[in-house]
Image (cartoon, one colour):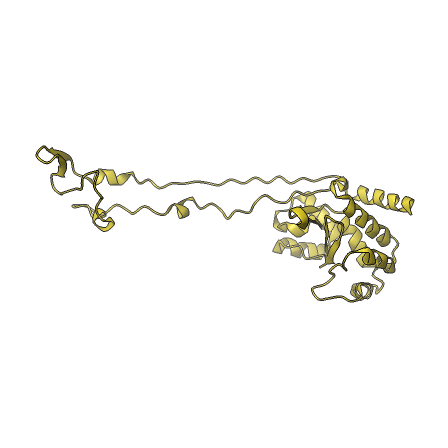
Length: 252
């Protein structure tokens, strides 16, 4: 069984060779309002030696050390229209909505915890047999049955057979191998870390590079892939395995 496992993982590792890294750049523009016009609205001040305070030639102003007039009065200089009021800083500086850095796409299986490697070995070995029944021991070794549908599934093997094109689940096994041979991403922190296959499940498909589109076509039929690219959302099989090796889901 050790030889079989090593052989399966060697094939599996060969499928994921050739790392494609994505570099995103973004920029944000800043703008500020010019608020210096108000200083030109005042008349020339002259000193009143009798009381030690400043008075305007045409209007009375408050001394610097006293509270200024109300906003409604200050906004009405005599003889000309009031200058435009300053806008709040938020609209002036609002950049495009923050998207955050895209998840790092991983291909190196050595970056996976050993518990996940063990789970992957079991899945790959069982899937390569072509017999969907071989997946039963893998499911039984899991801490909890993985989620296979939005609704509860009592018999995973029977469910996969019904969902398959040939009634034997072989295309489901092929989908497993294709999904797990793709790049993956790491999500979450601490005990909530999840490794997700394929990485397309966590990306906007409208931003794919040509090389990534080829990877998508390796997993998804062309007609479905085109529809996904138009919507930007991946809707084919995806899988998630926790850092403790528990297989959480495999569903569309």
